[in-house]
Length: 273
Image (cartoon, rainbow, N blue to C red):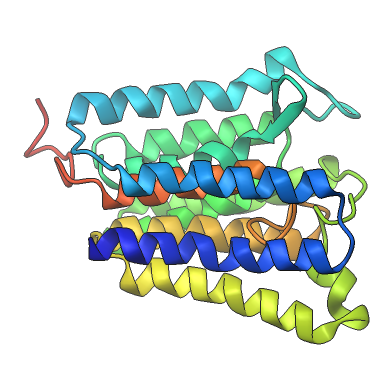
């Protein structure tokens, strides 16, 4: 129960603050409805997080990795950039939807964690998507801090330079209420900007220090949050959880639910089947 409560707080604090921001500053009503609906969906995996065994977790990992490549085949494409899943009238940013969950799944699977991160980075590079690249890089930092494995050190270096290349080739125009939220508020309403930033920090520290999960899971998931948020500050990428966008809300809800789930805590050489 404690794990679910902390996970719910981590998700709800920035999202509810974002809804207040959208309402106060005149965002379209549809934006509020989509974010509120995404929050309702995102809480479901947290409230209902059954035990998951190794086979189911690895099956989910394969599905999420495959989802990262779907936009490359289906579009939509803007200026050669394809990073959205087309679901009827709604388009979901695939990186923010699945990478948080992939970070949690990789943290529970020592055998394949480097391959999971590398495959996801390849998909982000092809899209190209600097935000997903930075999220993966900082998740890799969490892995490296946990066991100092040289493979994660190499991954961090590769992900850093790949993200710089993606930054050059993957920037699009910013959309109001979606990208550069903190930038737009900095001079117009600095206290609102500060308040939204504080809610993101609260989410970050709840995940990193309060979530009842193993340290590697907490570090990896907090790293993805930091990476996506950093990309939103550096360039025209979604301001996750505080701005308009269903994908990150659902994605972090799913990841937090997986973080709360019990089962095989880690899959490594000693526990492989």
